[in-house]
Amino acid sequence: MYEFNYHRPATLAEAGKLLADNAEAKLLAGGMTLIPTMKMRLAMPSDLVDLSAIENLQEIADDGDSVRIGAMVRHGLVLNLVGTVWITVYLRWVALPVLGIEP
Image (cartoon, rainbow, N blue to C red):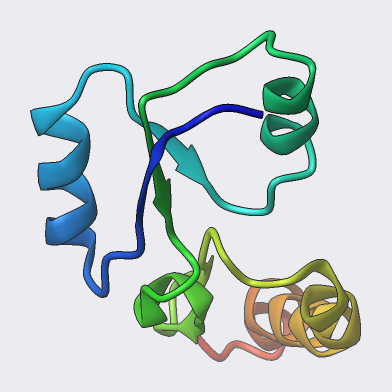
């Protein structure tokens, strides 16, 4: 690999500013594609912006009308919650309306 600047912002605003300030910056979310590509020198960003410290990207939120899964939520957590999410979706949009209850 080669030299690059590593950034680990704590907020989306900080990450956005880093990206806006440097057109060659790349986001590092999991590294499953970017890191090997960098090792092969197929990608050479001057800056890496690591999203792992941005807490609200690691959340799963249910606001009543939708479920939002943050970009940094790990697949294992999603798989553990899939049953719960599908039951919630089913109840809210299928079963409750049949019973005359508006979701």
